Length: 295
Picture 1 (cartoon, rainbow, N blue to C red):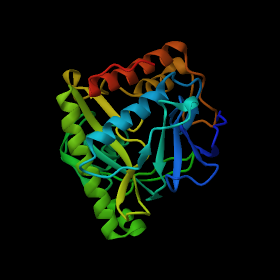
Picture 2 (picture 1 turned 180 degrees about the horizontal axis):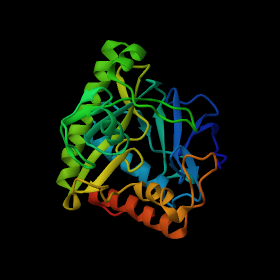
Picture 3 (picture 1 turned 120 degrees about the horizontal axis):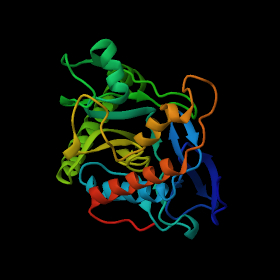
Picture 4 (picture 1 turned 90 degrees about the vertical axis):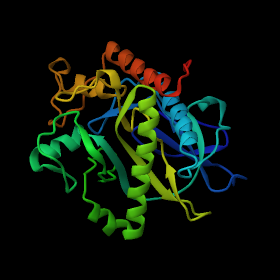
């Protein structure tokens, strides 16, 4: 449910974020207010209830990562001077001309990458060594793009050639190189904090003012990345994680009584699942930044 915000007009709601534009022309230029809600999604469904404080974790952690990456790639954040009603969970951002590509980097094999590998021995056309299992570290990080799906639809992993066809070879190569560079830096930072960054999804757009390819959306949060405790890493099974994997696992367990292949919506999340998921988001923030987040 969106809020009325003085000076801003609501224009769009996604699975997690609500977007607003200035009611009157802004001295900041062509900007958008990006508000991270407490909604949680899994398997292309928005679930109920939300995770209290999740939007604050996503925004605060994104801002921290944007600072870590500032020398590597520009980002879309213009200001954090936002309406009081959304303080802590919102950013004023430059409006970008977004590329219709989910830019995914994988350093470890799991999730949809593992499912694809088990069928073909490859991920988005990239051949991988035989004998890899859930949680295996890849010989080198790989760029495994996906199409951007509309709300309720599935993202689809695609080969690099499909990105070339969509955005052109020069842009495709830049997106791939930037994605892998961001992953490499973030993986080092996370590892220094005892956290494995297994994979991450990034979104880029072109800044109309500068023409530069710019990092947008959120970055390196538990919603867009898989974070694992390094001291518990053990390939061969699903890893403990600091993200919404706990929600996914509950939904697919007999306890939920839900069949994800059906057309029925998922059941409401139990209180303990909500609380334990919240704890995982907070622990991700605290481990990575070294600071506690008081909600």
